[in-house]
Image (cartoon, rainbow, N blue to C red; front, side):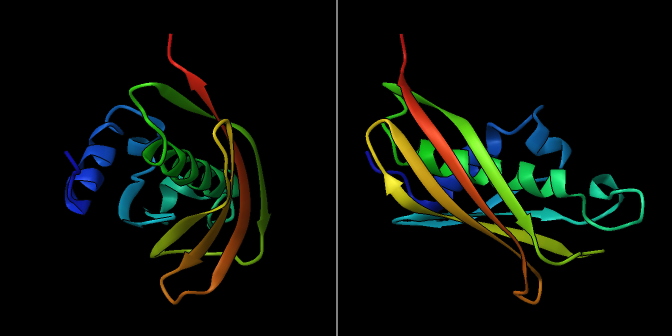
Length: 140
């Protein structure tokens, strides 16, 4: 049975309860054939001391959306996904609003996946560019 787009997003957000994603208010908001989009509010919860978005929060957003994307596109009854490496280049600061992370596949292998994650603000300005490698491992 194939789930609707809304059902997949609802399920993804439901499993975020009592996790870092809930703490940072990360929400999955859109997906398609080869991408997933999440958003996170920019407020004091994710600030660094001088009142702008913390790079670590941006990396957490990127890893969350990238890992979820890999998980959506593998057989989660047989495999689980783990992030194995993330890089982040921060280009611009943000003080308020939302940031959006769009994860797209550069490589979708049976065992490893490589994702490009672009983080933008409410005006579609590029904030960060991230790369995430994930691995799909068999469930025992």
